Amino acid sequence: MRHAIALVVLSTSMLLAGCAVAVTGRATKEVPAELFDPCILPEDALRSVNVDPATAAADFFGVQSEGWELCSWRSDWYFLSIFTTDTTVEELRARPKNTDFQPVEVGRRDAVTFRSIYESEADLCDLTYPSAVGTVIIRISTRGTKEQLEDPCAVSIRTARALDSYIPA
Image (cartoon, rainbow, N blue to C red; front, top):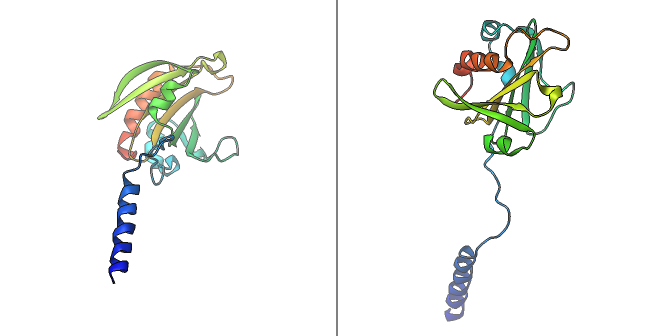
């Protein structure tokens, strides 16, 4: 019996000692259980931001991407794309190709607009903010040869504000 008690005490001591051991390595980021699917936005809300709900596309040119939810729609001169991702706003800021970060308020959310340093992407603007269901990115990009009728960042801000109540906090 004394031997059994000693074994339990020794096992418990080793277990508790193991809990105190420092773990080294790379920390993992907290990922939402499920990213928000922007394709579920109501048709009336989409029409209110001047896009055609019937033009919805839920992928990157036919390709699904792990860690991203996406939906895009067409307007008369631009595409609206809404992404949710487990990439953080801080990680987006750290990417060398992203520049011109400007703070903006979207409802009660602190958001930023930003652009790409590549000239080929001069006709688009991203707006991003964190949410409980992933980082949200709202992108306005000019459609091909269509004339840009307004600054894409102004459209992105107006669109984010109009759709804010439909995107989980």
